[in-house]
Length: 222
Image (cartoon, rainbow, N blue to C red; front, side):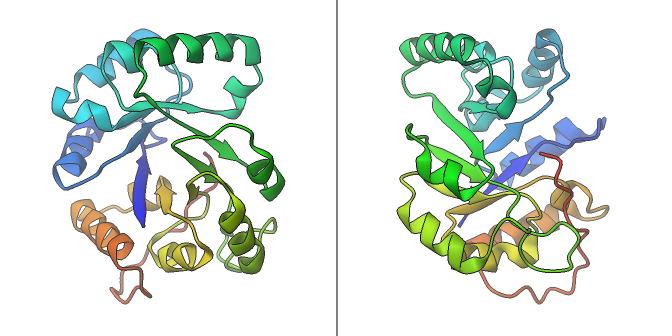
């Protein structure tokens, strides 16, 4: 199982030092999702991250920075998908100047996932889990349905929405290649580095969590 983290949805002065610390402790992919940021603000933010880690960063907007700052790639969100012509031209240019650029996207139901004509480096399916904790899965999915769909999908699929350390094992049983987390990580108030190590260990060897940690359930805000 692979682990992908999303940047904090709340502005924090300590975010950049924490991100660098995460990279130093083994984070391989970070999605930078700052939808309301200007291009200049995003560029300034990225410049604070050492060059040796920038090839682990995926942008959700201001795609041209992925080329100029030698980032890992881009994520095509729902908003970008609605502007098909502009998106198509951007992708054509970026793939010409940076052919090894990674591209991901998100799907919101099984039909979208299975009907996808394009093949991506990986995709997210969301919201997979119940964010209120009343049951395991959201009302859109069940385990058998997910197992069947993930076997048929031509893309590598990551679980997103309601994901936390306790549900990594369930995601693995369904056939997901990994999980994406945001609030389930950033809402941990103390010893986040230790928690990140726990996440990596759980992804490497999915099992029922017995670490006794109390984790706040993730909100579906991605």
